[in-house]
Amino acid sequence: MKIYLDCMPCFLRQALEAARISMSDEKMQKRILIEATKIISNVDQFDSSPEVGRELYHLVKKHTGIDDPYREIKKNHIESAQRIYPDMKYFLFKQKDRLEASLKIAAVGNVIDAAVNGNVDVKRNIIEEFDKEFKINDIERFKKDISTAKTLLIIGDNAGETVFDKILVEELLFLDITYAVRSEPIINDATLQEGLESGLNYGTHLISSGCSAPGTILEACSREFLDVYEAADIIISKGQGNYETLSDENRGIFFLLKAKCPVIAKDLGVSINDYVFVCK
Image 1: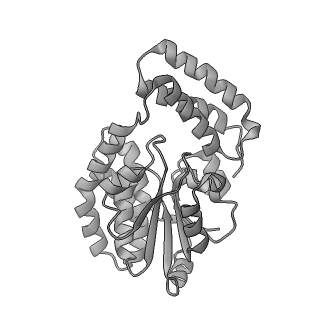
Image 2: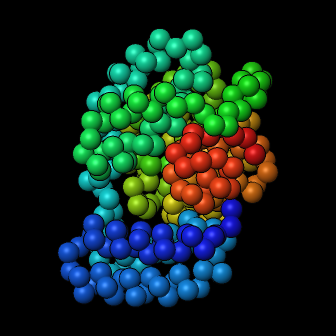
């Protein structure tokens, strides 16, 4: 997916947020922003927004010396998700279509970021989201595909979502599942550490994609990941960053996400905050 003009102010906002989380020195924050504008001014050399994001977060790390500024936030997200995990399993137990419900749980997990950071009732916030239907829903194609599939690759996104993804995994244990995370800390995305904390090493082959961007840039991925990617019968890609980097691949990837950005919503043909399960 190409980079739009509307992405550019968002890049600067992300750089400032990361700088502020990392340190309180306003002079250094200003220096980071000035250097960030230089990266953004050369946006035409990048193919996708996550590529720009990778450069900006490496810039913040270089100046602050902090490798994982979102570590405590990620830990908080996982702990919050684990507290309501039993409620999600109970919700799933009552559903007629457990597979579709587990996909919705995995998609709804994306809102835990705003719920935790906004200091609201996480359980209530999550449950309220279940009243929203998928705006695009390729569930019937997915059911057809898994009826003959043997292997599944899930490409993870944010740390808190991994707990919700575990519920989806538990519904698909008849498949040989690989779950891929980022190669190093980037924003609040999941790495191997968060995958282990969520228990995704039980029921899946937990691996790193080899990519340090907040997305999946295939050219930057490890051979281990690419071998799984190329051989997988089915791929589920979670979140917006993975959509931005993989939506033009045309190999039948199922994208599972909430469109929280107007640019991505427009690209998908939906409205902001719509849920999507679409195969491209």
